[in-house]
Length: 120
Image (tube, rainbow, N blue to C red; front, side, top):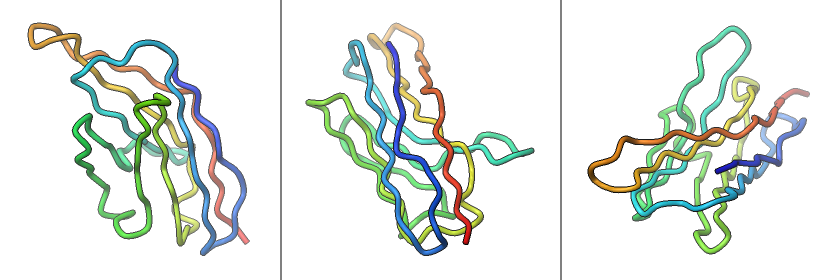
């Protein structure tokens, strides 16, 4: 399983970006796809995640500004980021967590990261 993230770049405060992450390989039924970010000198934190059934979770700092979605037919997860702020500047990583079955452990896969810079 491999994850390929794209869509980062430089944007002015108040602007928008859409990140994409394509998964190559099989995704098992019990899964959750998400986006994390890591700013310089800080730990990697959850931004948003979406479960196989469609439920979503967001960090408080991005609620109302970011939207996560997935296209199961394309094995792709998206992160639409609006009203971007300088504090959103970070490397964004996509994540796939899945189980092959109830008796199996969760497996974690990561993309390579894409840099988002919010600056005027």
